[in-house]
Length: 424
Ligand code: AMP
Ligand code: GLY
Image (cartoon, rainbow, N blue to C red; front, side, top):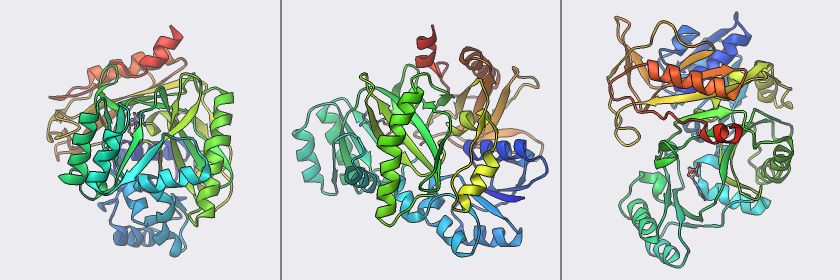
């Protein structure tokens, strides 16, 4: 078994950790990886979007499975390229990755598939977009259609704010190419759920449902981020709700993508809004595992992940996963200035002993020659705790997140607050 994981964030550390846990003897490479993955695998100094060198490395190292973590290489066609060269790949084609890379495409496919989602319109023209804002009720959500690292959706309480956001994207070029097409949609009330479906386009095996915390501040306030923490499983994701999500969202979306010449293979991430009445609507699709959701869902897979990834990469139906009984909570530690202008270089201190069941996943770190770890990205570390109960997992993740120090550390102490309130 010779597996190459593409990417270098917390998600890829968690993927590598999960593969290593199942297969202590496998030969694992990560490109580019990070100081965390270096403890489990061989890091290759190749960027996640350097398609030529990744293809060469897959050849040179005799890789039999490539697992692609981030959206950027998927959107650029890495999976197509490797498959054309005869390699097994876990991750969708460039065409199918548009479910994430183009929100305009994603909304159009949802509409044709009859998948429930917020009413929306897509614009490239500033005046037309402003006229639409003026004619619609507050609040409104304005989204850059292209890839924006989870920061391209702005929930606008007022029309004035929505207009200013539209101006910034279509007028001033904030978000660059990604913001040249803008989706404006109605605001949906409710609670979010991340449902990660492993699929060959027909068979579906869902990972435990997770909940992310997209806002920077405690109590879900402040700007959207890539995600400040997550937990799984989520009590509102009952078997009945999951069955409806499969039937009303996953199955029709996969069918429609296939019908449109973009059959899906990999993980389809459905970001769902569960309304107060139990209704399910899609907030977004992503073409990959979530970050930081991966850091809670993979530690809950007891057995079967590697086999499942190989099966799907071969085009076969995903094989079943055996799950742990407990709960997982992960707390993100971000750099000072995140999400706008994260500062690099802060030295990190991790205590020698952390609470039981805690794993520290590296997201944006570098290591000096003397072993000193430093913050090098927006999200620096994600601290996962697995425990028999949600409350214990939450307490341990928080305690470990508190104990790990670096100057300017930005983090939320309230990861899982909705679940905690439910279980009170
Ligand atoms: P997206 O990039 O589309 O996932 O949006 C990022 C985040 O913005 C979501 O996870 C939600 O928290 C929020 N959001 C996006 N669209 C909506 C919407 N229509 N209604 C309410 N919240 C939304
Ligand atoms: N945590 C949200 C995402 O991965 O897009």
